[in-house]
Image 1: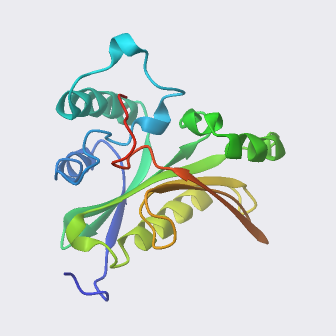
Image 2: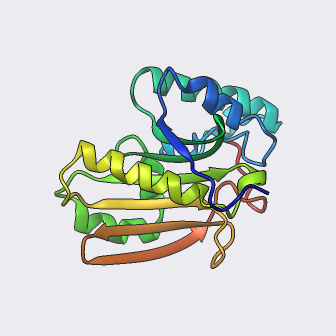
Length: 199
């Protein structure tokens, strides 16, 4: 297990770092099939587009994710340990990650944020060998810093993170962040083993 004191490097997802994203999402960690495409789609794909295996879904999702990266419509932070990608945090504009709007929890929050530009943090993934060692924290810090650079400090953020936490395993955490308050809501993760996803 890596040392808790290990210093991590972070990089933005881009055409240059795409091979590292591919490598991280090819480790058979249980979420390779998603390729972090779930929240890019406004809803589930129609039944006639469902694929039978996770391998097929992985190929389609990787192809579509790469297209989004090439168009500048996919944002995220890759975390590195010893130059190897070990973690990931996806973020983006409300328009790039519309699926959250289907959540009842989010519908209540969205009405309060209708007049501001919204950013969302939707997914965290960490390689099995590096869990509970600060990788997700490094990813979140880098994502927030990236958003701050792109927007004013007062921007409202809608946050949703998939993955396991000590308090709520296999959950999606939805938060509206302001300087003075944090509101949290949870719901089942689309990438948890108990959830069947055909997208």
